[in-house]
Image (cartoon, rainbow, N blue to C red; front, side):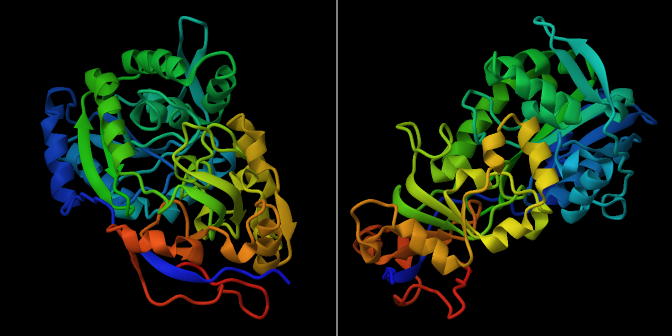
Length: 420
């Protein structure tokens, strides 16, 4: 039988700015836009509500709604999440409800549709799809988290621009833009489509959200539409600085307890695990180098969407049973990333999967392997590391042991315990 390495719980310390009073901060940021000069009493305002697991998103959207109501406007929430939620109205409303975004809590209607209107075409003839309800509103307000994209690199990645394209473009828009990426760069598509949306769809502003390494709201920044293109790259730089990281970049086996769409668009953040450019290999541009990845399960919040499972080399039968193949297939085909839905080598238990993975790491003996176990790629303050890292932990002021070392955490039935 394979000898597993000894492990120890670890705590990481990150530089974590945070917003202490979210309602007051949202109010101040919204007031800085002077929207009373654009939005008149009685006018309708469509506010985007996305599918990412953004910290405090229900509270943030509620305060945005209240600001427009204070102007006498009639705001409503639009589910803006491309093909997520199975590409159905019911599925997308369920996603929002899972985040606490309900009409009762928000204090405004939620109007869901998968219908789009082609509001314009780009210089290259690309149709610009836009949510039908949003297209009929007097104003549109974009709210989204700014962070590095899991597959694309550029001055603008995931944020306000992507919400205008993929989110408010719904399933039809997402399909068109992802297909266009085969022949055009993502920044080119962002720039050309966003320009049309800003010119045609009456976007009155946006609220950018940046999170810290502990999955907390680090910054809220209200941006006028004419500054989307210049401000978002600045915010992306901050998001990159505050992104959580693995405690060590070189890993023989990374064990991920949970993946899901509430964690990352790819289920697990490729910026963290070092699979941004090639699914199963780190490149010189990646910040982490994981030789093998084992995914143990899906988050309940992902509702069976197993996008990203194909990035791992190993998984468990339990995890595969949790996957909804239809929802996963729709998401990965729409995103032009079918590989992300492919099922890895599947073992009956966690222990069997770990044992198999450790047989594929080269000449390193399993008990000496560099193993890191994480809950997910969004929460990295608490992790587990194997004995091969212990000396490096002692030398790093930002790392500390959380208790004493212990035998590899496998139960008699072959299951593992999660990272707390």
